[in-house]
Length: 311
Length: 294
Image (cartoon, each protein chain N blue to C red):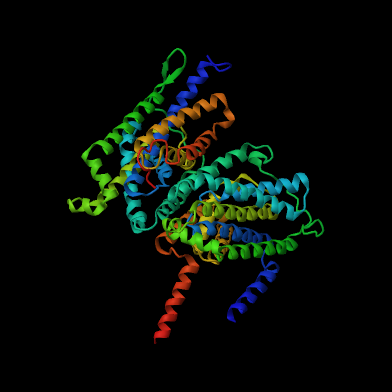
């Protein structure tokens, strides 16, 4: 019962939020909630550290921007194009990079994302160093005008809720179980007759699709797409969000996304200190709080509860 | 000799490729040593290389110690910093999944680069060549300093290779990674040996930084872009193979230089293209004769 109450409170808060907080800031959190979930799907559930998650995010931002700007398609078509292109990319990257496991997977995905970065730098449609500017926010389904920030917030919120529901379904499906089994004991899964590589490639595809959704949405929120979206600092940010919030928990990375975006917003005026703080927090989380905010909190609550039951 | 390509341009780019290759080889060798002996992927290798260049710059500008002094002092300073990093951030997590050590050294990069940038700004600092001038070989002009870098890096790379693969000390090091308990029962302090190995690898990165200072600008980001290329080199060569890392390093440098001559647009991409093909055709790495380390 209390669970539904909580959900209702959160729903009301999310609906009322844009009247109290600048909608663009909220929408940027929503984008990173999806993005962090996509990363969490790989590292938290499949044990795959993709160090180049930004390649899916940034490419989809360019694709969605290109569709909106050049072909003037409606919003949902632009979102879908971003998802399809990035998921296809995830599939290909998956095939190449699952050939090496563990730590080398991280290095390979980082190198491939740098490759994608240079490709997009040289491609004509991206605008090179200047990026893609003034992306129009066309009508949703070709009918509803959502060009102002407040209306668009509800579109972004709906998309995010759907994405999170999708993520929830995936990790709680038999497929999600197999991913977790691969993370914990890959040889065992193989001996049971499954082919871990196939599942990893599938996980890469799904994760890339989600990351692409986040990137396409981001292009619509800020109405521009730049090389920053494809660069490794973005990949680093999503790693920080996920670990800080709680790896392998449903809500952790979302909370982490919120914390990091708000922190960046606060620290933006202090130049390099934003990056230094990110590094310091990441280091502290890795050494002392590997379960992240959500993981540590629920562990603490569990401990308190058992102590209370005992007395 | 080739249509439309002057020999001057060709040899010039091959030389630049060899120079870049020297750095690829030195850094990927250090990475391979650290990985081979402690299974840590040292993401901070590029930042430590950058620190080497900055220490050389600081020695010259604050203390008046010239290049040749920095060549000895800077690697020791950077190596000592590596010792500090090993004690503070790597040792607490040494028994966890190796992904954590990759992430921890990555977090260290954010901090180190941020602090250096905060102090010195992001524009590069100049460092004059200690060996000005050069020799005209007829078909091209060879600056002395570049010749020195290529020769010195070859000596360092193969010297280190022999030290680790063909001496008793190297045998201890390799054994300590495989079976630490047994090596310990011989009365060898394994944790200390691991610390010193990490410091040695980091010191090599610092040495690379000193060598690089007169060629490239001394700048905070000089390491992080190089780092991704180094990762690709190590993946191509086969993880944990020291000789593989050295040879792939020089080879990739030269191939990159040649690409600049024949297809300039592809120069940034060629390393990654090679990596992708190497992964498809030789999944265990070009130089991994035995079962590649995972």
